[in-house]
Length: 395
Image 1 (cartoon, helix red, strand yellow):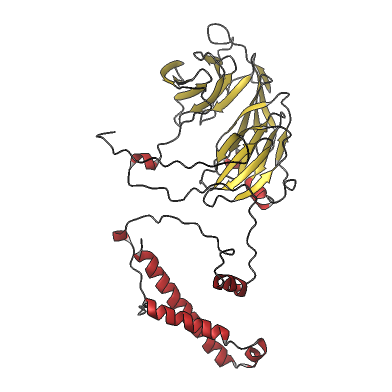
Image 2: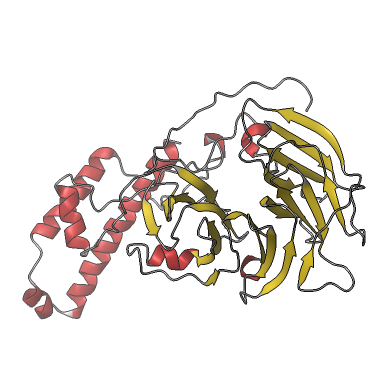
C-alpha cells in the first residue's frame, strides 16, 4: 500500500440476540445470518432484521455452524454429538414451525461433543470434516451422506480445516498441536490411526505437526493458495505458519483467548474510502416474522389511504455510481410537475370512487372497455415516469 490513506470512521451496530450466541455464520451473498443459541438455530434476514426461522432439532448447545460456498445448505454440530445437514431453502420455507423441518442428513457417529466443522467447495457436492472431543476427525460426503474416512488421534480435537485443493487436512488439538494429514496416499483405508513421533512425522511420513501453541487450538484457516496456515489458540496468540516448511513466520498477540480467525480477501471497503456497503444492516428481531398476506389491490390501497404501512416491506439499497453517471431517462414527451401529479392522482381517485359496479362493467361494450384500459395504462405510465425521474434526481 503506497502513501497514507485516510482513516474511515468505524460504525458499530450492537445487535441483541435472544441468548448467548455459541456459533455464527453468514451466507456468501450476505443475505442471511445463521446463529446457534443454546440448542436452537436462528435464521435472520440481514437487510431487514426479520427472524425468518427457528429450528430446534439438537438436544444440546449448537457449537459450530458452516455454510456451503453456494449458500444452498448449512451444517450444524452440537454438544449432543450430532452433525446435521440442512437445506436453507427448506428451513426458510418451513421456518414458522419449529418441528416442521427435517435435516437432509443426521450423522451420529461421534461419541463426544462436536467441536468444529469444515465445508469444502462444491455446494451440495462438497465434503464435510467434523472434529470432536472423542479424538476423531471424520470426513463425510454431503451429497450421499456417506462416511468417507475416519482419522483417530491420541488427543481430543478442537478445530479442523482443509486446504482449497483438499489435499491436506489440518486438525487443532487440545494440547496446542496442529496436525497435518495427507488425504491422498497409497494404501489408504477407511480408518486411520494418527501417531506422531517426536521428530514430527509418523512412520509413513504422511503426518506432520505444527508445534508452538501452549493451549488448545481454537480455530484454523488456510490461505487461498494453500501455502499459509493461520491458527488461533487460548494462549492469546495467533500464529501464521508456512505449510511447506512447518515454520511459524509470524505471531500476533492478543489480550485474551482467540475464539476465531480466518483468511479472507481484502474487503473493498478497506481498499477505498469512497465505497460504502450496498445493503444496510438492521437490528435483529426476536420474534418470528409473519409474511404479509396481500388481499388484492383494494386492501393495499385502503391501508395506504389510512396511513398504515403494515402491507409495505421495503429495503433501502445504495445504487452504484454517482449523480454525474446517472442514466438519462426518456420521458416520451411527458414532463409532469408536482401540481400535475397531484391532479393526476385526484383523477385516479375520482375514477376509482365513481367506478361502476361489476354488473355495469359487464354491460359495457368491448370498445368502451378498451378505452378505459388505455386510460389506466396511460395513467400508470405517467406515474412511473414521474417516480423514475424523482428517484434519479435525488441520488
